[in-house]
Length: 419
Image 1: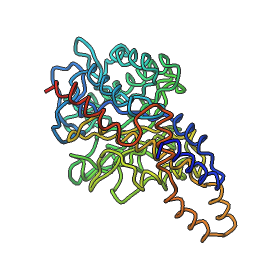
Image 2 (image 1 turned 180 degrees about the vertical axis):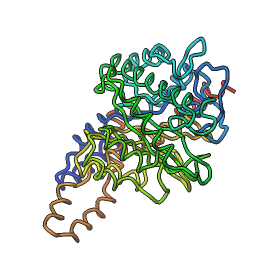
Image 3 (image 1 turned 135 degrees about the horizontal axis):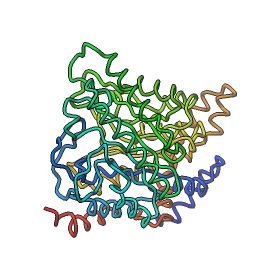
Image 4 (image 1 turned 90 degrees about the vertical axis):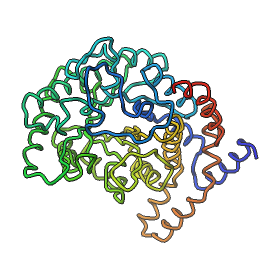
C-alpha cells in the first residue's frame, strides 16, 4: 500500500476522535531537537591541548570504525545524519570541541574558538546550543571541578563557566535566537565521603559566581543545570544530585535539565515534568535511555519515551520544554546511532500530538475513569505508523527503513576511509 493511501485511512481513523493529523505532522516537524556533536567522535573533542585525560567523568565504550577525527569530519557526519532525520534540528556543541591552531585553555576560550561551528550552522540554517566541559582535563583529575576544595582549581572552572556563557551569547547573536546552555559536572566520590556539605556549598558558590555576570544577556544565553544519580568514579556521591539541581534551579530562577539516563533505571522522568513546571519557566530534556545503570544509550521509541512526550502534550507545555539528545555509543555505526535516536524522539513527539487529550481529560473530570483507561488502551493500536511515514514523506527524508541503505553507502564511501 502506498504511503498516501495508508495515510488517508489513518487520517480518517484519527479524525473520528477529532484529531487533525495534518496539523499534528506540521507541529511535530516544527519542534526543534538538538543533536549532540559528541556522538560523532565518542566524546573525544577537538581542542588543541598539550595534555589531558581520557576520562574524568565521561566514557564511551566500543571501537566501531569511522569515528570523526576532527571538526570537518564531525560536521560532515552531522550533515549526513540530518539528511535522514525529519523536522527542525539544532546542534549542541561541547566546549572541548573548540578548534584553534594553538592551545587555548578552557578558562581562556572565546567565541573565536567556535567560529567554524558558527559559520557551518549559518550555512546549514540551524541554531547551536552549548555546554561547558568539566571533564577530560588535568584540573578534573581528582573528580572535582566547581566544587573543588583547592581554590585555584575551583576558580579556574568558574572562569571557564563565565567564558562559556560569553560563547553562548555570541552563538545566539550569530543565529538570531537563544542558545541553550547546559551545565553538568562530574564532581563526586567513588566511595563514602566524610563531607557531603562542603562540596555542595562550594558548588552553589561557584554557580552563583558564574551566573552573577550581568554583562551576559540571559535572553540569549539561557542556562539549565543538569543532575546525575551516579557515574564512573562517582558511584557513591554526586555533588550535583537531583535534589541539589532542582533546588538550585528553583531558588535562582534557572532552568533544570533532566536526562532520561541520569536516574535510577527504574525511575522515569515523565511524572516530574508537571511538578517542575509549576515553579520553573522552562525545562531542558536530554532524551536518552538507561540500561542497568546510570547511562546514556541510543534513544528508542519505547514506553518511557512516549510517556515523556505524552506528559508534555497533556499539560500543553510544548513552548516550555527544550528537547535535546544525549547518548554516545561507540560500538555501532555512529550515523545509525544519530538517526535511530533522533527519529525515535521525533516519533515520540508525533505520537503525543496524536493523543486524544481533550477527551481523556473530559472523561477524567466527569469521573468516567473506565472510559479514560479504555481509550488510552485503544490508542496504542491506532495506525500511528502510517502518519509517521507521511511525516517523513513531507519532510523529504527516507520512509521506513529505507535510510539504512543510505547509512551503509556513507559508511562504505566515507567512514571506511578513516581507518
